[in-house]
Length: 66
Image 1 (cartoon, helix red, strand yellow):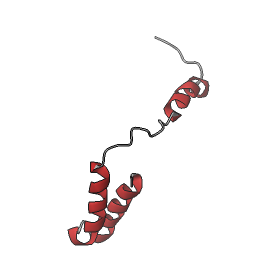
Image 2 (cartoon, rainbow, N blue to C red):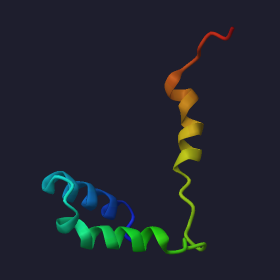
Image 3 (cartoon, rainbow, N blue to C red):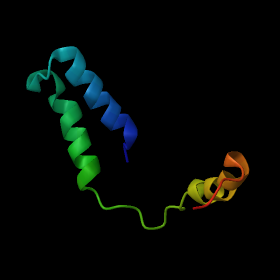
């Protein structure tokens, strides 16, 4: 899968070519293939949000409740 690299590549291409279809056609095709491909169900789930939610009260500190 191409993921974010395809997103940033196509955005960079559009920015540099003034949204020209001819110059970015190959990158657009790669992005379409990536987006249309089925997602890998065996991919390990990222648990960063779980850990961030546990740390949030320690970072923010106590606050007044209404």
